[in-house]
Image (cartoon, rainbow, N blue to C red):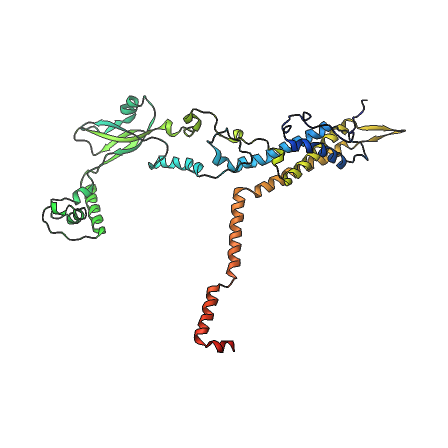
Length: 404
């Protein structure tokens, strides 16, 4: 059996002795790594008992602990800021940077509603036209327009311009004596002197609305009302055309509306270096010297648990050691179990602390604090009322009376 290597009590320089060398350029890491090795060995019983580890094992545990701390903090920051970071450049390191919330992510969502109702959005509305023929009521817009003008691309009709003359144009007739509101409207625009000399009377607004509604209702009941039916881009218009004319309509191309990459800023700028998801948000390993003391203490505890786990693996290999006239069993499995539990506890505590520091939690805490301050202020007498009361007493009673 090979002999286990025992910790000699001190280690060599940490530079070049870590697996990845993430922190070899960090002077504070180089200074603290040997100190951590001594501290961890003593925490595990050295020199009373032998520790079957070397300095490189302690340095590896220390490096892993810093990386784990960076990972946990960075993962939380990514989750807390991803909505504001999508579409931003990946060229800037965001570690230890303050990310300012914006409304850009919300606008990306609301733009879709703007597209559907025609009040904004990110999809172009186009205008097309077809020739309406006398006595022909039905028209296939895919065949007549999409195949010809959009190379067969699927289109979605958003608006059809097929309606009668607006009622307001018949109500405000400048040559009709019955157009009560006409003269008043023209006078407000300074055109009263250019109209026929007719008598008019000021009318309330609701009278205009009632008269317009009466004209529209008359057209709907007594005439063939302008309307249309649109099913699967098959247009059927009412009433049946009695002449040839051009009909216009607005439409969108379905592939543009359904394009999930329409906000890919990388395509717009010719660059692929944009934040798209959790995997490419530019958070890097933290510089050890930039971490505060509470973070460094967490790192030391996690590194100690990692070293203990490593020692347990070593002692699990050497199940027993010979002693004079007998053998002794080692506590490898116990060390591994304890180390695993300690690491899980440390990670859970760190995550809980980070969640308490989230933007949502801080806003809720700030709101609760404001409420408590308001409750305290309600119990404080307002000086203005006390002063007014004293002045009232002075006005009622003489000064010497109050003093007496």
